[in-house]
Image 1 (cartoon, each protein chain N blue to C red):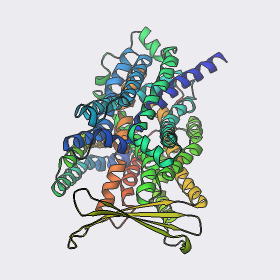
Image 2: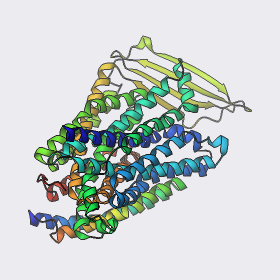
Image 3: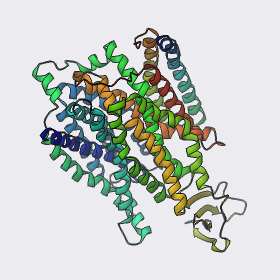
Image 4: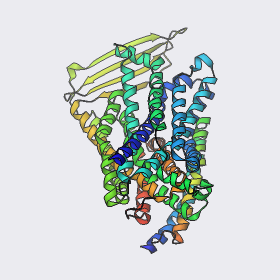
Length: 508
Length: 71
């Protein structure tokens, strides 16, 4: 009973901290547009350049680098203190972002400070996951690693869930008038989710400080058998390097794209391609995550019985063969063309505002349509009326926003839920799979790198490459799916051929 | 099965340079069509991060071809 209690303390301490780290990392991404307005004005090319660096460098370069730096530290000094350090680094950086004065107040110092803090966030995230997964796995009893580490696996998705929820709640609670509340959020309220992080981190640090070092690492240390040079032993030793490469190409690469497509790209697709309004595009994901999250534990636990390999590969395979019909389903559900319009309910409003020091006007036409199923379509067209009649706006700015009727909304939740199920299949067992692939003395280093290249680089690139593909093949709204489908398919083939399906019953 | 693993190793071995070629070509095309510091940074990061990964794919293919993953 005492041992059972201890493992739950370990899981709580590890999972809470990891969840907070994901929360911290996601709020920056989720608030990228608002942050860009505060710190990286587009009118200033250098500030805009720093913005691009913040987006790309933190996710793709610094995360794997953090995996190396903290992985090495974790194999040298221990898991407990290393992932405590990553938590302090992440929490401190996030809190500090919430305090940085805007570009208008302190000029260039603002984007440079924010960029530095964002890089520190990426570095910390690169070190956190491997430590938490290793720490839990090394406490878990024989044959239950899949089940116990799956709790850590829920944290990435729950971190996204918490970040979306906190942002939506804050955005709508700053004033009784929704429009005023959103304006306040964009002006200063966005800082609240960042500042809130320090409370979560404080609690998590307190809990983690009370924990003991991993028993397997302590045993190695007492025997004087810890690695002298974890980086060299991980990547300079052929026997270990070949397992690092197999983990990357046969598992984490496919896992990364399935993970990002099912959550981030799905949400982006619903908002930007299906044109569903800001709140609904996020609450659809929130519901799907809420229903899907328990499945991480189900698949993690199941992997203890039947092995990790086929559950992960089945998730990737299902993603490869069903992504196109699922995303086509989202597109069809949002299409208003086949719906019947309630003509009497249609409204059009025109508003013109004079452009200062000219005789020109900016005209905004807001057109609203309702459909018999309850869907509402708002089209806002903005153009310029020039005093000189020979000038016309070449390309008016058109913004479309749809609010879905309840039935259609829940059908979309169901489709995203199916994609989340794939995420839980590939992600639920992967911590146990990675932990068991490498020996204790270089485990932290060896598992962190393939995880962060797979999840951070292959997965993190999904929205960019998918968007790039849609700009290259403009006639096909589903062209962006080629990237995750091809990457996951390669991973399925490599995993099927080379991964071992036997169940690990050793406790090392 | 071991024979299939070895033969597939040739595909992975060649996939590495093919990826480097494809990414370098796409980067050059994007930089030429959309000149600007943003494009250079984005594609510069892609190229820098993907070349070592592509080399890793070739090493993986080499190991597979040598029968290192045979059971």
